[in-house]
Image 1: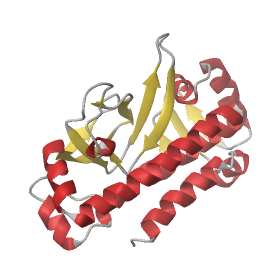
Image 2: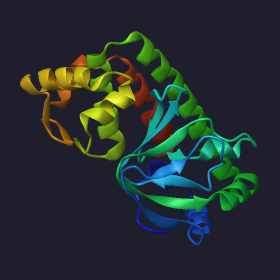
Image 3: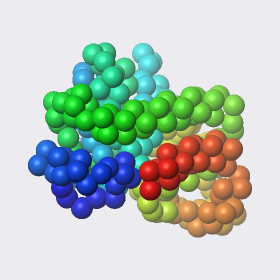
Length: 233
């Protein structure tokens, strides 16, 4: 198996890692790479080593809403192991990265045969389900400034870097708001020294200050994922 930083893979026993080694392969995932689409079962699972993948639902008027985000802490496509229903959302790389790819056929076989693999996948899906619920509440109840701070901190944690290749347009899509609103909020954060921003690149300049204005959803979701992997460390 290739070198990795994926937290889920790092929790697996040496025996299971040896089983995965001939099955998994490294892949580069440029920005915009689609990992799965509505109505079609994913062809593979992707264990991200770097980058950020976002899952979105698009409605009839073309509006888009983010329902989950994942980085090196998780696996994309795993819910398709639970049953025959295809996804209703689309998942794509918001920030370019790389991953370990495991075909869905091999994933289904391991899910059926390996209690350890099945347990780790189910634990992550449970955590992801809780995170999705928290995100839904966040999008309904919290202001753009709080949500932008939360999103940037989450993306930095899950990609392992405080410098993120993101445009205002992509941030507006993820937050379900206007680009002009994101520009105003990000501009204020930059003037206050919380962010450094230039076209297509956002850097968290003062993490403590940014955390101070983020909604409490950031702490809730971070605690959930950290607890999941701390228990297996």
